[in-house]
Structure formats: C-alpha cells, structure tokens
Length: 382
Image (cartoon, rainbow, N blue to C red; front, side):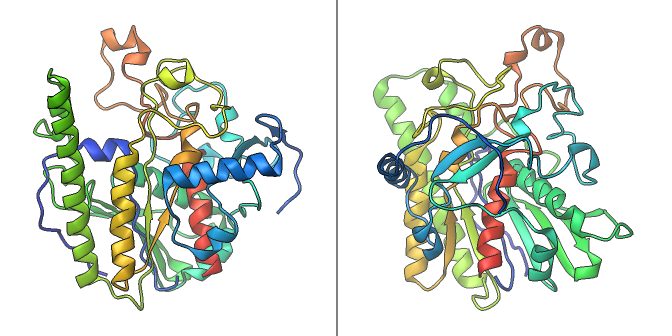
C-alpha cells in the first residue's frame, strides 16, 4: 500500500486536537468478574432508551454485527481484577506522552475501568489470535497524535503474544513509524497525517505552526461573525473529507483493504456540563448516563457520516466506529500534568497546573485500549 499525498491544502490544526481519525488497512479483514457498577443497573427499557439516544447523537455504525449488539452503547464498570490489560512500565513501546504513572500520577483507578455494552460483552484482546489474523499483512493507523496514542495502545496490547527474543523496535521513515512482528511477517504502523489531506502540519517535527484555523476563534466578533466562522470550519472539514474520499476511490484496492474511520475523541478542557473546570486532578468518570460533552461537535460528525454513506453507495465500504460517546464519560483518564511536556512548563504554568493540563490525549493503559478492543472484535469476526 502506498500512502500518497492528497491535493487539498488546509492551514489548520484545529481538527487534530479535537478528534480522532483512524484508517486501518489489512487484507482481511468472557470472563465472569466481580464488578462495582458506576451507578445502579438500568432496566431493559431504560437501556434501550439510552441506546437510542446514543445512536441519535453519534450517528450510524456501518457494520451489521453492531446493529445486533451495539458495542458503543453501554457503561463503564470498575474492574480491578481483570484490568488493566497490561502494565505501563512493562510495555516496550510506551512513550513519555502517555506514561502517566511514570510522570507522577499517584492514583491508578483510571486503569481499572472496563467498557460494558448493554446487551453483550466486549471481548478481551487475544494478542496471538489477532497476530494470526493479520499474518502476512499490514495494519496502518493514519492521523494525528491521538492516532499515535491508539497505535501505542495496540502495540502494548499485543506485546505479550510476541516471542521474548523478538525485536521490540520501531523504525521511522519520515512520516511513517513501523513495527514489524517478524514471526508473523506482519507490520503495525503509524503514518503521521493530522488532516488526512496535505497541510502545513504534515511535518512530524514542525507541525505546531501559527498559520492555522485555530487562531480565527481567538478574535472578538459578534454573533453573526461567529456563525460565519463556524460555517467556514464545517465547510473546510467537508472539503477535506471529500478530497479524502476521492483519494480512497482512486487508490484503494477494494479486494485487499479493510477501512475504519473512527469518530471524535472528546476533550475535557471545559467543565460546565459536569460541574468542574478541566481534567486536572479529576479521578472519577462522569456517572450521568447519556452524557454528551459540550466540546463534542455533532455537526462535524454528521458530515463524516454523510461522506461515509456516499462512499458506501459507490461501492467502497468504510466501517464507522462511534467511540465518542463512550469516551466522553472519561474525564478522569487524560494525562493532565502527568506526561513529558516539550518544551517543559514555565514557572507561571507550574504555579497553576490547570493552565497546561493535557485534556486531549489519554493515559495508557486507558481509554484507547477499548477502541482497540472494538477494532479487534471487528477484525476477528471478519
């Protein structure tokens, strides 16, 4: 598979910080536990109501198996018996961006929450089964630092299935990071492309540029001005996805490639809807069922869903994974101040930790492990 450049230029890094896009390309594509439930068990009628609300908010899922059991509608269950799924300190692939324990986080409950769909179970990842499934193939995550967050999670999840003598080495070639599992003749890769289309943020080292759309929102203007700028953002996003979909139609081998597109990864910088400020010093998930965060842009998600439907009508299947709602509960699971910052925070920031807390990415082990469990379920059943 050749990963080429798309031809639209967008001067924005706005999208990359707020949502997750995943492109996986491969040719093919329970245990009983003692649990503490986040809140009282809902009745079947209440669960159906919640599930319908989730579907209405986060849109469709394009796989028939999900219509029989909606993996994206459920609750977080505290499970300190079977979780975490791996040890941060023992993962050979862990990076300082997501190693919250290494950087001083003292409470570890964020590692012990298990996602429980309402009407079925989400299977644990069997690393050996997954690696057998992708034997002789490539798995490629494409996107921004949130995609890298999930890629590292996947490598940590499958590491136990590799021989101890196998090299745990990632090789870099410009924008592409490659891990090769030699005994399976398979690779699990990450390609840095924060907009999926060509942009001035494509350099892995120098992507924090000033000439970006995010600066538009910092200027003062009246309500009509704000409305126009919001419409501009949505239009640019639609243009980017149209270019992305045109590229897929031309370049993707439909008999050898399986595609996934994952919805927004929610941030928690503002706490108006859960009586807090940002994610700093937060240790519990949001307990309100059917919660919907104020920073989650449903209009952008609807544009994504419309684009994927158009592709399906043209004979190109893209599995759309609605991880937004399940992730939105987890305001406790961000790195906050517990990560490596480059450059390091200054004295003023250190005096006010909330001012520099990372409320976008996720600690590992953590929420991205669940995203990978869902992808694992799709791939194993395909």
